[in-house]
Amino acid sequence: MREAPARTEPGPPARTRRLGAAARWARRAPLLPALIFTIVVTQLPFVATLVISLMRWNSLDPANRGFAGLDNYAAVFTDPDLRGAIGVTVLLTATVVLVSLALGLGLALLLDRGFAGRGVVRTMLIAPFLVVPVAAALLWKHALYNPEYGLLNGVLTWLFGADAPQPEWISGMPLLAVEAALVWQWTPFMMLILLAGLQSRPQDAVEAARIDGATSWQVFRHLTLPHLRQYLELGALLGSIYVVQNFDAVFTITSGGLGTANLPYTIYQTFYQAHDYGRASAAGVVVVVGSIVIATFALRVVSSLLREEVRG
Image (cartoon, rainbow, N blue to C red; front, side, top):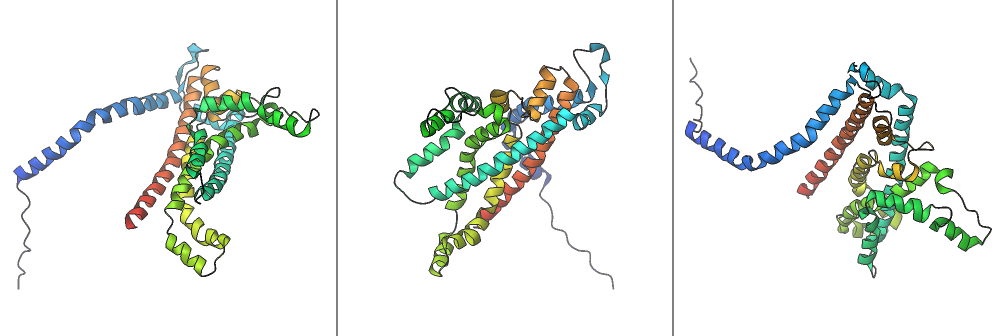
């Protein structure tokens, strides 16, 4: 016995489909100039950088210009100076992000409690993040680190008298000097993210735990910290994206000397001092690829946070 053919639902008429497509294009058309502008100002320079990174191009040796393949990328990973710059970049980024997160968490826990003048204190703590990066670096270099009139040595003199030690903060501990300036500027950013996480914490669970006799440490260990996990990840990833590209603090405080040259500063040196455009472009592409990898993880964390907010 033959089976009857399955009935198919009739689709929308062709005229309706055309009108729907026209309506969609009418909604998207106003965004096209912005999209084209974004592509022109962001993607075309990157494509040009990618092309130059494959070329042998040093303005001091114009007769030796040509296609170099992946030689510039091989030089980035085999040159001792560039490898050292990669190591400094990783160490600088990891130290600044981890210390900023720890200090930001402590400040967020303090600001999560109610006390008189909390709004003023919060505004003052946010202020370092609003300072222009070059101005912040100059502030640390001249107002704090200067061995003759800087605040740090002045405090030592005030505490211990005329015989107090007067350390050379920049030449004696150059990488630590750069890290301290960056930690000062990035701690408020971490504090804001973690404070937002603390204020979204379900208070009924905290109150139930306290009624059951949980101590403050147990509440923090088993309720607060798991709740802040994604906020900590988000702060770490966003901070890493920006700190890995830092140039202002290294250039202003140490001028890249004394073992503080990170990858962005080395790119600057390769481009403007060695005039090796091909190798500088290859190093720049490496930084961009690393930033894209970190940004991908950051976007995934943001997406998971938004999904949880929607479920809540």
